Length: 188
Image (tube, rainbow, N blue to C red; front, side, top):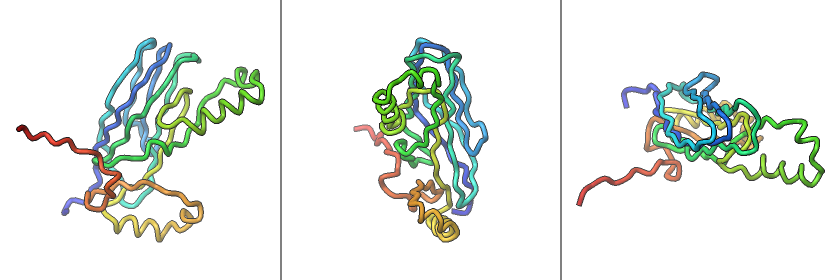
């Protein structure tokens, strides 16, 4: 490994649908990497692909901004996988900031509010049914030495039990369960 530049390919399959026209913007560290408008009343399946350069041993944020022309009941954004440099992020570890219509929310009784609170924040998985912002956090590095340097200089993360995914340039440093599956394409 003579080239230690962290230029990683991103591959993010999504499914998006709504009764109205919508938009999706993907940002990494507040820099727009993908932006697209989608027509309403149609299910869209797409694989978002782009390259991005990172700094060694730094924490990063990938944000998905899901918005629409108007509020509608039926809308959904599914993030099926986030694959960076052939390594996957945990899509069930999202920080979700939905835009909830205050008039609708205030008309709900306590039982309904509890039900929707659990649905919105507790059981979303990788599917998001409200417009808003979805964030995932991860670090990038050349190899395991980057992780050790980061861990030693950021000891406050251990107190918070923050568990960050790591994306490495050196594929030997990644753990097996974070590797994207490679399809065997040999012909018999």
